[in-house]
Structures are given as C-alpha cells and as structure tokens.
Image 1: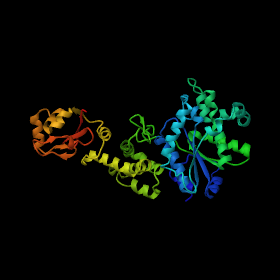
Image 2: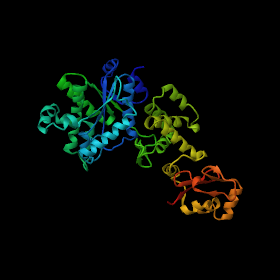
Image 3: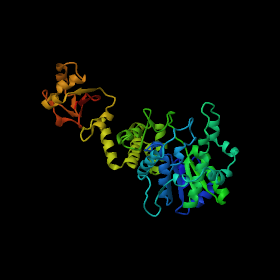
Image 4: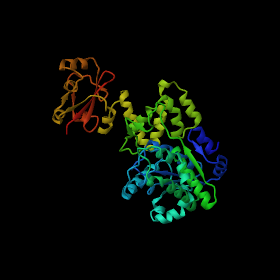
Length: 422
C-alpha cells in the first residue's frame, strides 16, 4: 500500500492537490515535505500530534521532513480558524518557543541519518527583506480578488465585530513566500497542514507555478473534534500539552484513557503506528474492557514521553484500582486524588507517631475514635492501599507515600488525601 492510501485509511487526509501526480512523485524516495508550526507557546499540544505524526510517517516511508517554525509569521498571526487577531510576540519569545518545539519534535522525527529531518525558521529569509522588495517580488503575483476568495479571509471579513487587519491579511503571502523559499533551497515540492491552511498552501503552489513554472503539491489533514462536540485537545477546559511540566505524563495518559468509545478507533488510526488490522481487532473487543482506550493511551504516551514515563503513568493510574502506593511524588498524588477530600496533619504529630484512628477522625472518614476503631477491626481501612490491621497502628514519616502525603482508604472507593505541613 502506498503512503497516501495508508493516510487515507487512517483518516489523515482531508484534501490533496493532483493526487495522481503526487502518488508518482512519492514513488521516488527522498522527497521533502514541510509543515509549519506556529511558535505561539514554548510547547506543542495534542492538536499538534497530527502534523508531527504526518512528518514521522513520511520519514518512515523514506522521505525528508522539514519542520518550519514561524519566527516571522508567528509575530503576525494566521487568521485561519480565528475570530480575533492574535497578540503579537517579541522576537525573543519566538526564539525561545522555537527551541521548545524542536525538543518535542525530536521524539517524532529523527534529525540524523540519510533522510534526516531539518528545522528552519522563516525569519531567516524574511527578516532582511524590505517591504518594497516584498511587494515588488511577491505581492505582484496575487490579486486582491484572489486573496479575498480564500475562505479564511472571507470568513473574517464577514465578521463585522472583529474584521481582519492588514497585517493578518498579508499572512497568506508570507506563507506562499515560505513555500517558494523551501522549493528553491531544499527542492521541497510538498506542503502539508490543517484543513484551515488550504488557502495558504494553494497560494504557495500558485506562486511556485508563476515564478518557477513548476508543479508543487498540498495535503491537508482534518481539524479534529470529539464525537460529543467538545474541542479536541482540551481536558477540564485546559489544553493538553506535550510538555510534561504543563501536562504531566499521568494527566496525559488519563486524557487518552478517557476517550469516548465513538472516537477511539479514529484516534488509534491517527495517533499511533499500529496496523489497521490490529486496530480493528482492538475495537472489536467488548467496550467495557476498554482495551482500545488502554492501547491508545499507552502508544501515544510512549511516543510523546517515553517508556519510563509511560510506566510511571500506568503505575499512578493503577493506584485507583488498589495497587500499593509507593515511588510517587507529591504532584502525582495531588493529581490522582484531586477530587477526594483532603486534610492537613502537623509534622510533629507524624514525628511522634500519629495513630491511624486519629488520622481517620481528622480526615472525616470516621466521626469518632470509637467509629475509627470499629472500621479498623472490620478490616476496611487502608493506608496507601495497604490494609491496616492493628488497632494501635501508627503513621510515621517513613509511612508517607510521597514527600509529604499519604492516602487513607475506607472500603473500596472512599479515599482521603493527607498532607503533612512542613
């Protein structure tokens, strides 16, 4: 199966220009393909996984990925898919963000080897171009009518409240200039991007045709939403980042575990390298087993954060199913038990040996020491998911599950998070 057919089966293609000619081109190894990443933050989020994996699939097929970070265009803002103009950024912020993006993309594509990926910054070829030169050399090839016909521009023009600034209106020309530069310097004939980039991509194709009398190609992938209508890549209203300091591997893993049954097959095709037959087999299992969700969470977390972080995320997740709690950090426990009652204990109490019965009362799990004693006698009390049997059991610093926290459980599902004041 050729590359485009595989991408089609995975639901990774929305539109493509001249499919037949592009198929022939891709039969020749070493073709360059570029995708632009907007450096509006120092981390990518899960919405960036589709383009990152698109580049990875092309590299695995023997082609050469080009990662373009928009050092220039990032200071302007692309109007595509936006209802209001982005805040402009300083060059220093853009440079820092570009460095963060490169580090993350190294998990997806290799920057070494015969078809090594390369990263370019469009500021390198636009920063020194004067306004007059740009109008003379690039702007003359586009009519205003052509630009107004693009959906991203037309939609903003129809929005009477926000409209579109001249700065953003110029974005299409800058992106077309990028494609021309990469064609000239890297022999890059293929650009890919989200479906909202179709107008910008075809503008670049037109510029190459006009100025170099050569054919270039464009591929777009669909912009994702969940079946429930929620915006893809949001969890509790917050973006799910690829940076572990913004979204921990545990939170990242949980995002994928919670994938709706209606979405899991589509996401397995888009976000993993699993074969289509294996995905079909996973999705044929009884939904209550959530085998497809578990495999999805494992594969994507492994790709983004690595094997060690995946093992840690699985271990943290298993805590909720009764696995003994050890080797975790305060941050892990705070995330796992974010929705359970919490209580504070003075450090001196722990140093002196806090009776578990007293901790049960302090937590609210028992109304009195008598009730706490009865709970212990009944065998239903757990400290860090280990059953507590002795009526006079004490909690000391070495019994903490993390730096300053411990977990009490009564029965199967009643958890209480204890925090030791430092």
